[in-house]
Length: 454
Image (cartoon, rainbow, N blue to C red; front, side):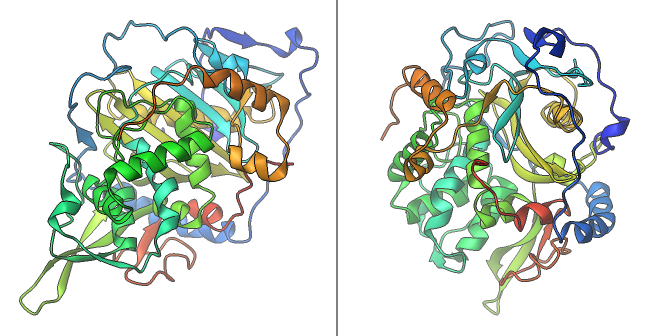
């Protein structure tokens, strides 16, 4: 069951393309037990979990719409036939093995094998702090990202506006919304705080909130350009941005590797960590007869965070973003923490027909990652931003060389809350409304996130 302890997980046999046992690699480091690390606030988060998570699991907000948006037109990299093969010549950013087709993993002594019931066309599981990739499957396959692209949008725009800034929405702010877009319910001629708008982006995947924030940033075209610039700095060379919200557009692609870079970069920002960990919040509604604003509750559409029918909240989950469109299918990037170990996982477009497949497969990979940590040889790295390496004047040889090798593979350039508090005081201190954060997020929200251990 999802959310069960790692010890209860059973891993089945699998036949990946590049599974290498330690006996075949004498240089494989010996497995050694890892001492648990816990922040001061983590013990409190465990206590909060007992109250918050059962409530979330019991009320999965069945009325919340899926993050579904129809395709505007066929997109290169769209699912198509399920028996199509990944392309040749995929990027090798992060290491040569990451550019190879199929599953890449190097198992050491005592390492569990990968779960066999993972059907995503592309996936990756990595250590969030060191950037070491524990295992991957076609991580550089360029595919439509759906609303997981909102992580790049937030990483780009979130630092630009103070959360208490107010914005009066006008008609042009909401112009150009795609038919069938997921919406949080932003209305013209009403004012919203930047904080409100980001809640709409992260919890309800609201394209209307994205468009308003884009308008504040100088318009959709400028925001797309800014996002592309940010992707380039992050060395996310598989990504071509066409719409800021992830709505299906011709030529808009990313990859499991790039989405994981976006999440890792965004998580450096405390506000980003807080928003992606928020389970429920109050959102401003219409004005009543007394000119007072009504509010309504919104709930996060990330089902590993809030749970759903037949799906429990994942133990230790703390974000990040889910998506679902016609071209992309289901996509998901998540971050979770257990005993001081923080892992990132991304799954794109699973072919399994089981309900909530993208979440279940992400959970299986996280379970494997926590069990395998320290028992596998990494197959690659999450590269640091170019700006970070420029400031230090250093870069690992493998990362620098592989980034250059992958550059030639990139596509063309881009075209023009009143909830229960589960945040150990973090949510309680937010002006303008309380948030309900999952308990596992306390550790991550208040933690310093190094881009790379040195």
